[in-house]
Image (cartoon, rainbow, N blue to C red; front, side, top):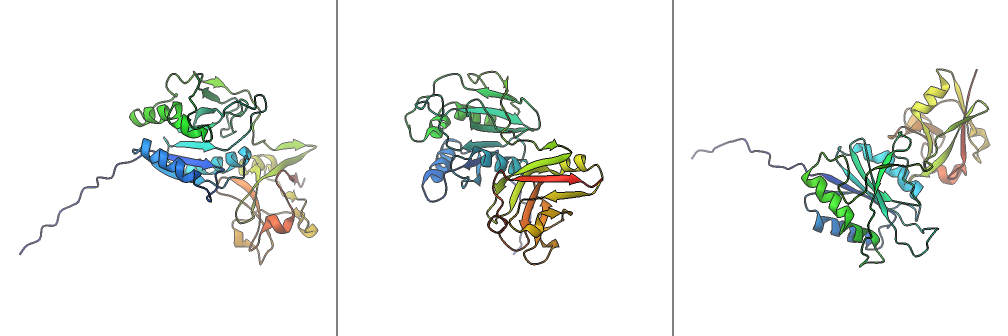
Length: 290
């Protein structure tokens, strides 16, 4: 009896990726409802979660998490963000969403008073808005109405034409976003580079808005002091950025760059957010040693 050995063809199809970032949490059915609707309406897409544990109504946190993560996904991915907010101008207005394209990635984001997250280094990045009224059969879950309408239209267009560079009509033509950035850039004040804490992760590590590129440009090859307002006063001045979490002993302070290139403040084996007393928006200051 003989056996035939042949090479099995790889019939796997490369599916476009659609990610979700929300403040729904994992206790309630909302994240499952969103994923279920996406899987049902768009079976040709691979649905992945970035996070459903964004702090309630915290679009800044959502921006930071998404900005850190999106470049790890393949170009052509679509990133869906739904974080609740209350319009200030018209309390009865339904949430709306806008679309932008950055580095070959698509983003669908809450259009919060004309603001979009600072996901790009380009100032006044072009965005597209939907000019028509979107029916609201599900008033308590607006994103599902958009998936059945203009956002769903975009997803289907991308599936058939992956090379699209603009959302199709009736999405409006791109306009320059003139709004303030949500993730503020560090600034130099009296010769000191001033940034701030913008995010605390599950481990208690504190992430700043200071990137390696910004810090290197500021330092210009000179030694630096990093100044913190920690309750552990002996660690309010740091002179070294480390390569990894275990470069120091026990629960000593360690500063390093995270995978997104942002300066991170941590304790080697403990919870920096609890023990250092630093909070979101607290300053992180860096001075050159001349």
